[in-house]
Image (cartoon, protein in one colour):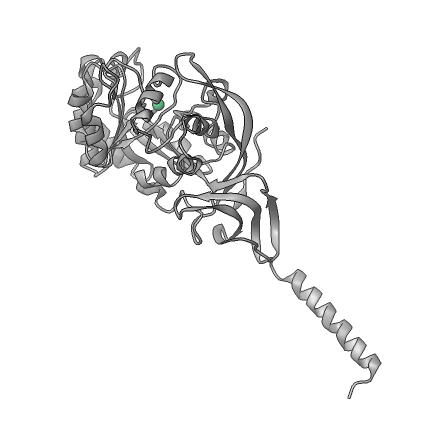
Length: 395
Ligand SMILES: [Zn+2]
């Protein structure tokens, strides 16, 4: 039997051993995001939870996670959402753009048509060098040296050149973009779209069209779209918008959605949306499937500002917060296979997280025609986690 002194010594040794083991072992988690309002529409979750991350993946989402973490983010009072996926940006135009967009929570993006077959190599190089998943839609028309619209001369849209661009960049190019407004395409809108479709379908890829102020009406354009294709700038004003002269949603538009065509917000800067169009369409129940910014490196100085600001605009029109988050995460992830494991905080998923704050107050929002509307809430980007690692904050 041990005497009292021996017992104490054994206990001390045991405690020392425990301390040693704890410090020698790796912590249970790399990161815990504590106490935020987790909104993950991919699993129908909206509630206060902790999110635990290890090895770059989500390992637990629970009410109160115990266990050591190398780093903890206090998210009380904040919204914790899957990393934002923006399917219409121009983040491939500048070497530093992907990292800049990442600071605002954009953990995945699509550059929509900055590169035609002639300059896609440069865009693809930027995307490959970026920290997050960046993919591209190749423009159906060559881009270099054009003044005005790239489809005004239809010879710029060469199907075999587009196919060649896709074949060279299968890892980056995930679709084809065609801009159809009159200043870009003139009377070549339908032929430009046909050529985009011809190139895309040979690789089983989607086409994204930019609508608004086109020569051809929606009833002529929409039949050229297949399931999974995307209409961006969905609330672009007339001529030839998604509404008829009486402001009613054109039946062909609703029919296109029913057969699987995606309708995307596409904020942009000029010509792409008016508050009036948003109001009329949403009052008829025609909401976006996906939200997007049409982002570029100057966006912080325009009405875009950042992705959470664009999301706030739909919130102002009464879209529920969980649906707004869905449009910027899980819905966007479903549009392109490249994001098939993203847009979710489900256990096992890559740990891409956007932490935002929903502030109350008086916030002014801009459309593309100097129209101003004031909303009572705005989402602000607070912190971003990419593949389990916290991204340095925006300065
Ligand atoms: Zn664009």
